[in-house]
Length: 138
Length: 138
DNA sequence: GAGCAATTGTTTAATCGGAAACTATATATA
DNA sequence: TATATATAGTTTCCGATTAAACAATTGCTC
Image (cartoon, protein in one colour):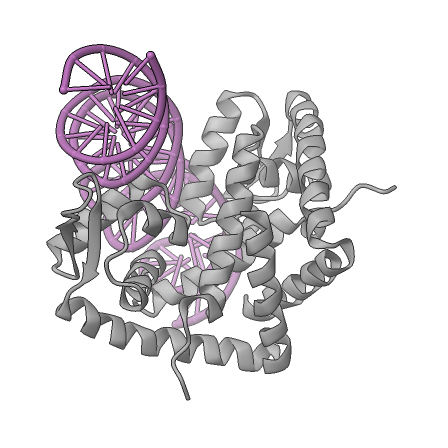
């Protein structure tokens, strides 16, 4: 069996696709991790740090510092869990919610453009495949 | 039209898939970017920094420092281009080649496992789709 | 061919990320 | 209930990444 070239490797293809898309969003003024954090909080407010780290595939110290910065910017806030005082529950602030709204628009517009170019049917299939791939790899 | 949830967003799905796979390779002792750099040099020795940065979706200052470290470790080396002395052509050393060989094995074994679990046919389709996606998004 | 713009890569300063150690709280065991 | 163990997050220290400025070389235009 012949050796695989770099772009027959899933790890390479995922790195490339992720970086290009992430860069383009950065250019649109959207920090991917910040946006993902706000988005997940808008969907499930009150998640503790550990769950958030899982949802976003960030490790905990990285998340702590990302949250520190976003608390500085008043985008999110911490609430200690009274039932288990080790836990910190995270919430989106009003400012965060309005920032999220504006960023949602940019992300959706950008992705719509990308998916149009790629072909909407194929884009949908790609997303479905990635979703099941992630379930399986975690 | 209802708003998309986080895991209907391509940018999120790509970030998740990339990070999980990249982490698993790190756990196997493979630094994804180092491996990709060595791999691309083994396929096209003599590429200048700019082309390498494109191939790997790294920005140039990041690549410069990655290369600095790998030169320290004697995995790669720089050769100034005599025809255009602004350019630096990169090559894989013997030590780099043997390190690449051992890491290739780990990457291939790990990806084989992942692709088996996911289903080899689907994995192949996923890769093909990612490849054309990348071509289109760049 | 002199002067100006474009290309290629590196350096600098500041921010960010990751592994390991640490703190605080909760749970299990004796 | 005292002690040990496990869990949740943060902090620390160091290495890595980024944007902006810089240096060197080449190409263009007059």
